[in-house]
Length: 238
Image (cartoon, rainbow, N blue to C red; front, side, top):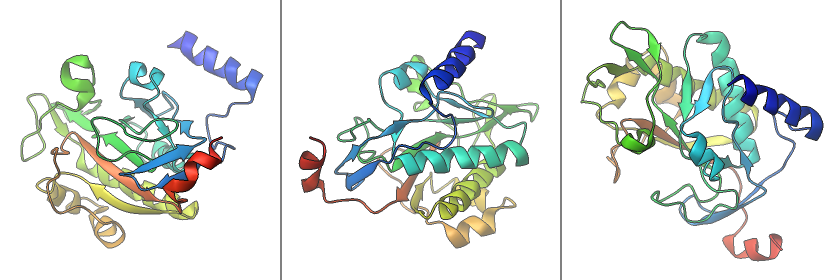
């Protein structure tokens, strides 16, 4: 971990790569379900209070997003490091650098879709991190019951609510919006019971129908950024 951190600092010093806001400007095309991305940027593998769901997946290019989305995500994590200093967050799949079909997902095609793994607590009530590895499909095969519990972990609903509120607020500050949040409808009532529940119901749109996968171990967020027609991608990318 120390070597990785030092390498990242050296790379940033030598090449001007910032861990915070990126100066690269991405362009999205089409829709989340049929789109592409120009000048996509990757999320950092780790930060003060967050990590990627898989170093291997990140190395394979599965954690790219639109530049503005990246800035919003990092702004939100920075805000949460102050309000929830003991909570560690983990993000999941995002998309490819050039966008396009992103199996097995039906969306994630133009840099505006992001999966976030649920923050969890252990049996003693202490913040923990959802295990994500090849044997549980990098976290996507974890199953919570209808109260948000597994054998030894339970979903930290207040942390999810705080995260979604931070994402909405930082998106607003960056001049973009959140289109929708997909999270298991049977677990959504637990969000409404948190301190940020009323805020979420007022400002965010949650999918009311269960999607083709349950979305209990992660919540999917789609952002809204003006995108160019998909037909113009071929000419712009040359």
